[in-house]
Length: 134
Image (cartoon, rainbow, N blue to C red):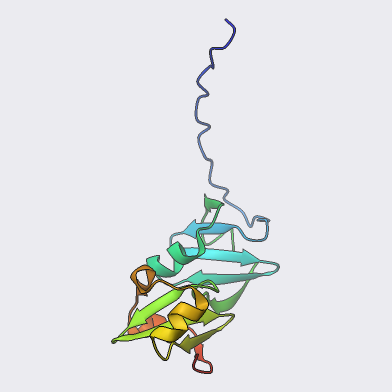
């Protein structure tokens, strides 16, 4: 029949049981958490808010065994460009730094909307070193 689309059946995901090669930028969810794969390294994604800041396009189920060949390289912080809010202060993530926003004029100059800031814990804020104040 022309014009009628057939429904595709979902393909069940099979979790590998041996060390596996994953593409760069992939997120692998294991029994110990979510891990971001980059080259020969794996970075722990420490919180749901950090995970959401990246909007990863690809995530797969795995196990600690499947990512065992990757070297642990710390924790992943918030994505560059993420606006953070903690203890009455706003920060903008630039690279691996959090930069405090000094006032409303900075919001206007950078085109930021304080309503879109992600409210984070002190521990999450500490994932980034402190940079210069905006």
